[in-house]
Figure (cartoon, rainbow over the protein chains, first blue to last red):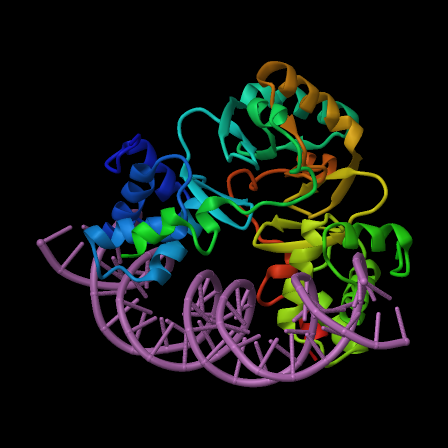
Length: 169
Length: 169
DNA sequence: CTTATTATTGCGAAAATTCTCAGTTGCGAA
DNA sequence: TTCGCAACTGAGAATTTTCGCAATAATAAG
C-alpha cells in the first residue's frame, strides 16, 4: 500500500539501527504494506510465501522483531493475538470496539495532551506513538445489552472463523 | 498480598461469569497475589508448584485466561513478555521506564479526562482500566544519551539475566 | 574490485503454548 | 442431600514460537 520497499527513508532507518537489507526482508515488508492496517502473523507468512515459498517462518518472526525495534512496523497485542501494521508517516492510535471490532484511527496529537499532563504531574515522558484503546464504538454503545464484562476474541484469532477457513484451503 | 482467596467479592465475580471455584484456582490466585505487581508466567507456575506440584501448566494458562476474562487479573504485554497482576480495588495505569524499568502507578482518574475527550470527539467509550504507557522516567530523562530508538527487553524476559539464574536452580 | 566483519538465513531441535479427550467435580436445582 | 449438567483438570499430542548452528551474503573499509 504505502511505502513500497525501495524507499531511502526506510533503508536509512534500517541501516541506522545496524540492521541489513535483504531480499527476504523486502518481501516481508511488502507483504505487511499490502495487507493494510492490521495483519496477523499467518496472513503475513502466507503472503510472503506466495512470493518466496522458501522463506522460513523463523525468518519472518525474526524480521518482525527487527522491524519493530527500528519502529518500521507496530506490533500490538489485541484480544488474543498480535496484529502488525506498517508504521506510516503520521503517528496515530486506535480505538477498537470489542463488540463489532470496528477501528477508529485517531491522530497522535489528540492524545498528546494527556501525555503532556502526565509529564507535568510525574515528570514521565511517554514515548509510545501507537496505542490501542479498547471499548465500545458509538453504534455498539446504543445497541448494548450484554457485552460489558465479557472479553471477546478478535475474529482473526477465533479458531473456527469463516474468514479463516477460506484462507486455509 | 491483597485480596486473599476466600473473598466473597472475588467468588461472586467468578461465578457471575459462569466460571467455577476450584482448589487449583485458589492456589493460582494466591500465587498472583503473593508475587505482587508484575509476575511472569514462570514465576506464577513456580509459586503454584511449590504449594501443589501436580497442577499442570495447561491449567495455569487456562486459569490466567479465565481470570483475565472476568477481570480478576490484568495480563499485559510488556517489552517481550506478558506480566500478570491481581486486579485490585482501585483502577490504575502504569508508566514504565524502558531504561531503568521503574514503574510509576497512576490512578485511573488521571487518564479519565482523556477518555472523556475521546468520547466527545468520536463517541467512543474506552473501557480498559489498566493501560501501560512506556517511556522515560524523570531520572533517566536527564541521564539520557543513547536510548531513544532502541527497544529494550524487560529484565524478566532476558535470556541470561542474573535475576533469572537465581531462580533456575 | 577485493576483503573482512558480522548480521542474517534456513534448518532441525528445543521450548513454549494450545488443544483434545476422558475422567472429575463444582454448583444450581430439585 | 442427591442429581445432572457443564466447567474444569491432567496427560499427552499438536501446534506455535524460539533457539543453536553452520553456511551465506550485506556492508563498510581498503
